[in-house]
Length: 111
Image (tube, rainbow, N blue to C red; front, side):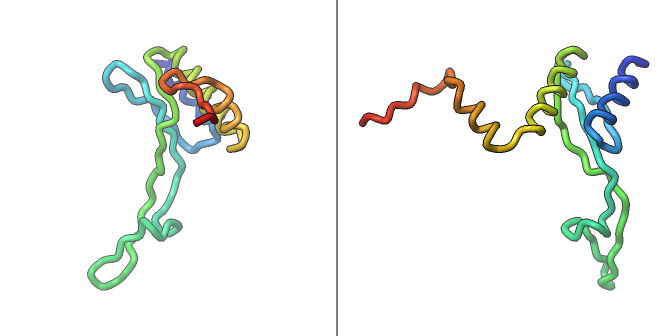
């Protein structure tokens, strides 16, 4: 348990988020990160009562960013998430297209 708490603290620092947790489902670990938010700052999330008065509350905006069956796989997945976040879209597309995708035939410009 202590090892997992230490991992979560490291992930919060690495990913610059407010909170993080590891959820387990189906034998796989998922890293969920979050940021403190308020409906008063997010117009799409505001709720109004019957009198038209805005009712606001604080919440955590969460995102699942990594997964793995072991702690080592989870850490590797986090590192890949960080690597991808540091890329521009052009860099990502260049990397993606530089590999032959096994499920697609090679592209041919001839008809």
